[in-house]
Image (cartoon, rainbow, N blue to C red; front, side, top):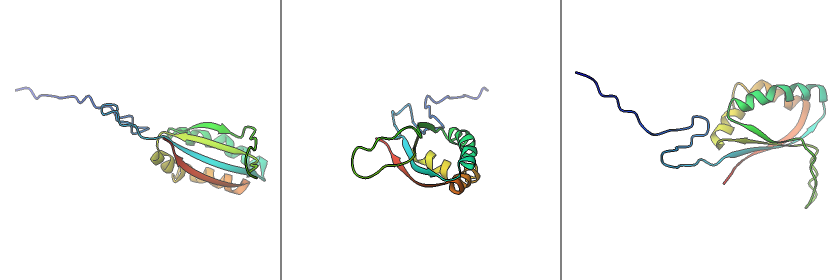
Length: 121
């Protein structure tokens, strides 16, 4: 007697949790940071190491320190970074990961920063 094997047509992207069968779309998430560097040499080492960490969680840079132009209010950040992740959960996992912890420590030692996670639409 032969055993039957049934394959499911459900496809789930492991990086962004989208269920392509049901059309379920998980909103992307954005890690937004304002950074003021006070130790350029150490921060440069951070800049070299962090991309691989971000990419391993499905993230990609949208903005990485380009020129910022104030338009409203008094906010005049020195440096802005925006990283897009497939979901808020992937962004949280990256930020809280053992992989990122030593890299984050370099940023914390080399710069003053504020950061938020924002879920997209």
